[in-house]
Length: 205
Image (cartoon, rainbow, N blue to C red; front, side, top):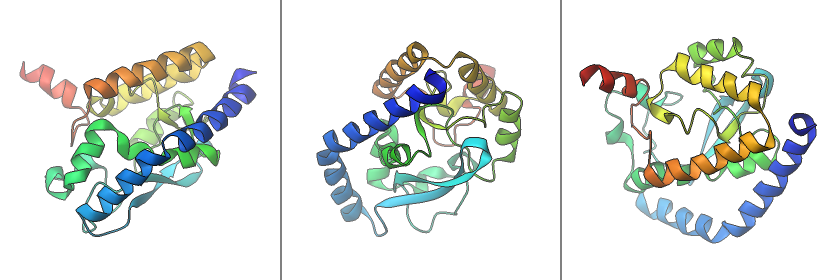
């Protein structure tokens, strides 16, 4: 009942309220992004949604317009050179993700779920297939996000996404939501070029 109906209703209500309450912050960030560098305020990118159907995810633009397209940040040789001044702050605080409230309203995403993979991240998509993590709506945040975020290697991230699929419930979603607030405040797991960084650091220790 929760997985098939109530979760979507709650997502719609929460995203609608969030859009209204956060509208002043949206306005301030839009002005800052526009003044900081040339280019559009919003950044659109093709992502993998429920049942591996594509959709365009929305983010506040954090990079210069000459950044290579459709390439995960961790695959850039020097990500910092492409990130704007405003972008560094937006990424560190996760405020760049706020426009995804629109994706939630449209039914393309959920508040809680696996983070949507890029259309060309075949390794992550294939790994998630093992755990049926591509069968549900991707989320603004999720179980993997509070357990390592950018630092997780692909197989670990997919396994955590699969664990979320098995444990979907209101209480587990609430746990992920509250855990996300803590992670954002601490900036846990935010590493530019960070896939596998946790494992690398452990190996260097």
